[in-house]
Image (cartoon, rainbow, N blue to C red; front, side, top):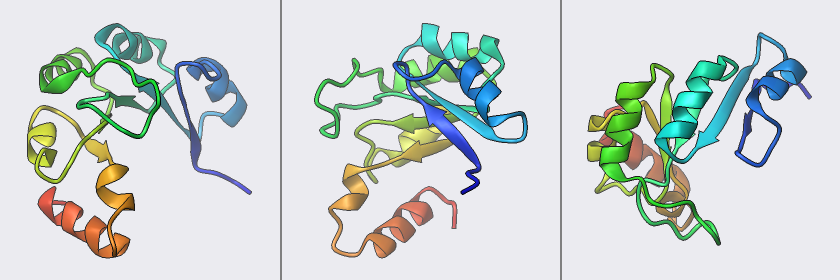
Length: 132
């Protein structure tokens, strides 16, 4: 199977090594949890986008990193030009503020997986984000 790319975390293969494995024509994403990590990812030059968070408290991880909040996202946005995918406790109610703070996209788990109709829920969220 030929994947479009790979997303690696802080405890996975380093982004430059992941880039060496997948090659220049594939997407490499990297999870970051603070300003130092996101700046290092941008300087490294091996990633196409960064995940950043958790923005809010999240129940999807047993030992989540410290919450960075909207101010942390604003600082990250000012520090890097890479696309930022915000993650961690984001809901439909907080979505507009997250996008306004500088996220290019969001990753949501809890707001989607528990919905009785996942497809309808994703459509609602996309509309709320102004992406439909």
